[in-house]
Length: 125
Image (cartoon, rainbow, N blue to C red):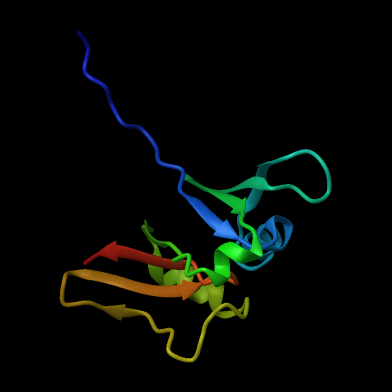
């Protein structure tokens, strides 16, 4: 019997409006639309940049008011300094966003998308 090899992961993030989320990832973070449900108001879509694919899934407004937690993704980036400089110009940082070296041996920065999903971009020191 051959051994299974895990090749990729496609995290699914909860969003309020799929196309608004797609537009954020495309226009602010440099992703491209990979796919979406049929129609102008899809319930599911995927965005891709380089080797990263993120899926975005619509959730009813009641899900948000009943305490649904958002996700946090850690995304490894070879040139985290260059990505930080790119995102400086796209109005995605909050007042405490900074690029820093951590005590656990990474250089990283984090942002939240418009649905409060956390994205931490990092590289090893």
